[in-house]
Amino acid sequence: MQGSVSASSKSRPWSSWLADIVLAGLVSGPFAAPFLAASGLPVLTQISEIIYWMGQQVCPQPDMGVPLAAGNIMAVCMRCYGTVFGLVAMRVLYGRDRGQSAYWLDRYGLIGFGLAFALCMMYPAELALQGFPWWPMSNLRMALFGAVAGIGLGAYIMPIFHSYLEEG
Image 1 (cartoon, rainbow, N blue to C red):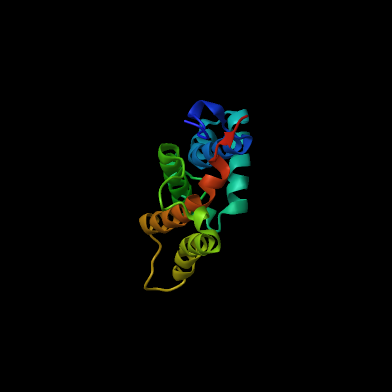
Image 2 (cartoon, helix red, strand yellow):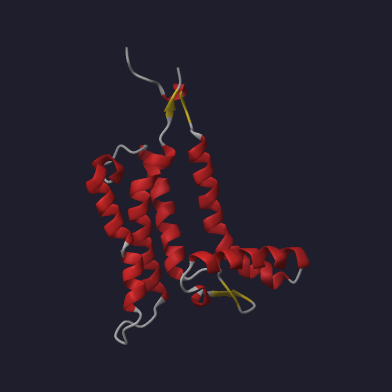
């Protein structure tokens, strides 16, 4: 067929590799930190201290992490970790359809950006609602609101980071 590009003539851009490495770190780091800290081994506890420090820089409530090992908590709260799970879900979906579905928001320009932004606002909305007595802290609720934010962000950025380049 003239004008078509086969899958073998496309290459994965460096941004895709870098995004996947960062996403792997976001998934594994907060979860690994309590186990590294509980190990008692000097090198591993230093690594856990670095992960905890990074968590404190990005998470608004790192002290609300879930306890995992010997009283050590995750490096981020469940809202942040839910956001990471939303991003992972969208990465898996992008890997399956390469941006062909209608829910990839980058294809809609400014309207898609606005929708992604609105979904991402679920994260700070839940954080703000915790200030009210009728909205108590719940790890499950935090994770769900974070996941919605991660899905919104992922629906916009995955095609940007992972689109394949044509060679030739």
